Amino acid sequence: MLTLFFGGGELLVIAIVILVIFGASKIPLFMRNLGRGVGEFKKGIKEAENQEDKEKE
Image 1 (cartoon, rainbow, N blue to C red):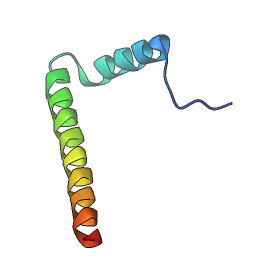
Image 2 (image 1 turned 90 degrees about the horizontal axis):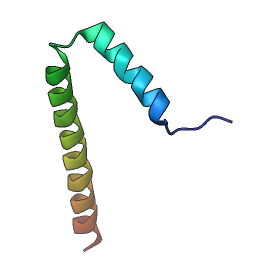
Image 3 (image 1 turned 135 degrees about the vertical axis):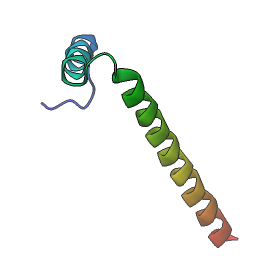
């Protein structure tokens, strides 16, 4: 059965692969951009919810 969650071992393997592909110097930049992307996504979700609430009124 396909599971959508990763355990500790899988996350470690993914982290090592990312480290090998991007190198240690680019990891902070990658994580910063990932954080910004997540923030923008959450902001978009919140704006959509606010718009939906306004339409209900």
